[in-house]
Length: 367
Image 1 (cartoon, rainbow, N blue to C red):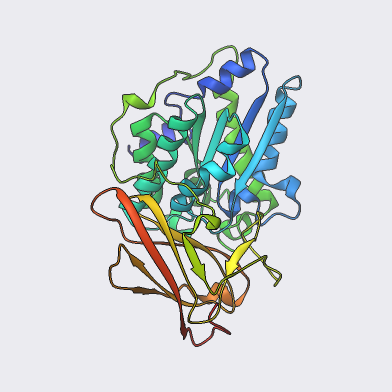
Image 2 (cartoon, rainbow, N blue to C red; image 1 turned 30 degrees about the vertical axis):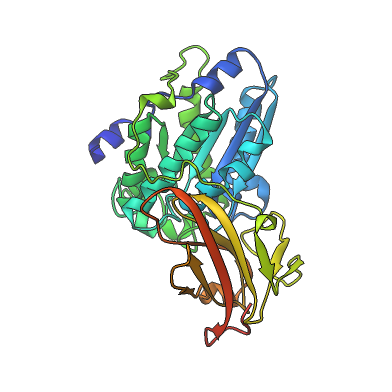
């Protein structure tokens, strides 16, 4: 799709629209809307939760449909990408019951590896439509320096491949901001002082961009672009996508030695609003083993100032060391995923994880 086409479409693509949401409005039935994304979705950068684009969108819908019952789910987690989003989709969204509309926002946090972007975003779409076939999905593209180089920069262009393939509507906030910066209408430094997270005024602009799309897509007189379809209509873009992804409870470990069950008591904690109950170890003799079924596996860890190096072995192969310590660890504890390499075939995976005595020079420990 060319930049000219994006301009002509007023920065959104209707595709097959929001048929489930539209139908629930016609029937005056309760609507459940979930927001899956990173810190911009969670509400970072605002002076109060009520000024985030997400909450402003919720208010817009409640004001526009005053007799409608709405339930909203905030599944935004700062610093997370679509790979992690696909793995936590069930735990943080689908397990809460019927979901009528799912907004997905990962254009800022996703990296520059096309294959991983496809697997993450396609995994979210296919997993959602397999487990909740009536759920509408809409992709949202927020702005950062890397997304303000063109109307369709790399990350957004790859997300659009998935959206186009599956008929997912999308709203390109970043393209609108880019055009307004070029025309002198918007000052990027004021819109997002840290060049990622919008100010209150920036969040308000995002909310306005989305409201313009929703005004058309949910017009009960016209029902713009609302057509239902099934997952069977589409072949996979990447057969190794994360459709089968899930988070498994650490209590399902086959065995563990040297770990203790605890909750995070240290502060500060960032990018996590869920339970911090976890297995903790800091001695080199600590190990745990678990079994999974699939083609890849990994760990979700709470990393912080005392994070050390661990090593893992998959199906009795040689151990590989992993050092997740970075500059963010010095500031706070936060969730970090370690995804192990993809195996050639899907099947049973035996994993052993061991602590080591090694650590980054700046780390205060080997946990």
